[in-house]
Amino acid sequence: MSFEDELDAILVKGKEKSAEDILRSIQSAYGEVPYVFEFMKDQPEILLTKILHNNAILRSSTLDMKTVELISIAVSAAMRCSHCLKLHLRMATNMGISDEEIAAAIFLAGNLVNASVLATATRQLDEERDVCRACKIGSEACDINGEEQKPQ
Image (cartoon, rainbow, N blue to C red; front, side, top):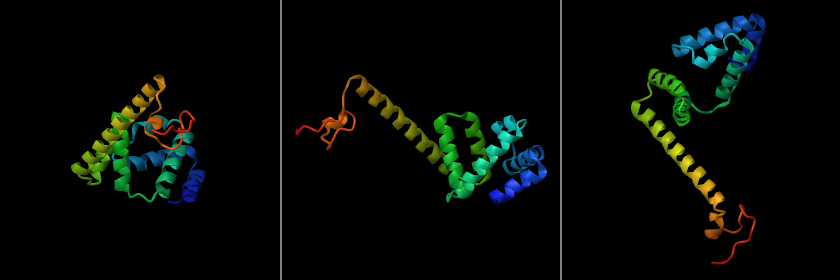
């Protein structure tokens, strides 16, 4: 369904009926209604806006749904959102995504989280110690201190 078709349906049915219909279609597609959508059901304008936003992102994406689901698993794992992770694991299983592919997404998420922790903490430590590693590795100009490099 196009964006215009979605908007037309909302205008014809009204926000309450449209929200109910969308929740039913989500239930049918996912086998459940994600918690956040269930939470929004009493505020149909917010729910509809969120669904329209989600659909616009998916429609404009060149990624296939399997890739989207694997990304969703990786992000859920990285953010440590157990509710999201459980939902996306069930979705992946329903889509026929193998455990090996799911594990690869989880391992990639763990690797990125690990790198993020290390990068953030070491930069913070260097900043506290007034150390500029760019200066020490002899790059052209120091973006951190704004100084020209000294020949080594």
